[in-house]
Image 1 (cartoon, rainbow, N blue to C red):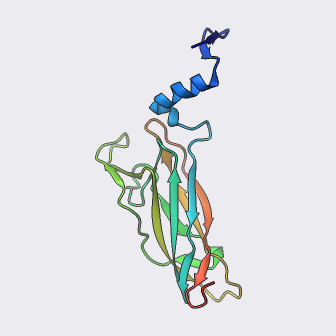
Image 2 (image 1 turned 45 degrees about the vertical axis):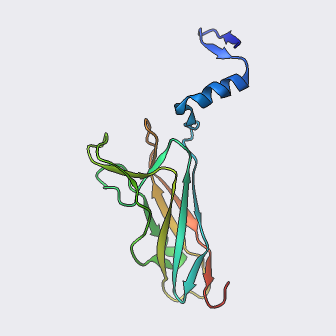
Image 3 (image 1 turned 120 degrees about the horizontal axis):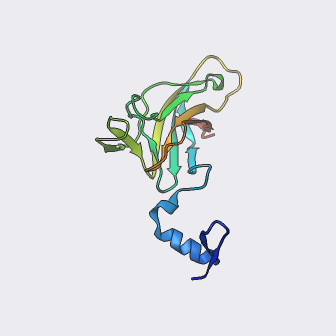
Length: 171
């Protein structure tokens, strides 16, 4: 393996494929760059019956990272929260349902922690509010905190739009 010595005395591999191969052997190398992990939220098409609908949000997250669960004790890290955006004309109308999280009895927070590692699907019951002339897609505010084994990022909030199909019309 060829190395170049920089003015700081650090040895850096000349070959990118050598650097990539050695990084792939190191579990810590799964940590992404300075922006943090890639956390992707998507919504499936929700079917509605009149003024009610069930939306399903899907979480996908980079390896080596996790997002705290819906049932995480708020005395510790920020739990996953999903709420309606009032201006969308829809509201969350019941308890959210998600998968059983991974549970760890001890943590740096001094309490048990619960998280989703690879991803999760959360069902969100919705109800149309008020008399809206136009049918608007529900928008949900998703607040989560992503952490690795050594780093927690600040909580993040995003909005996810959900397409709704009427059960009777199929559109």
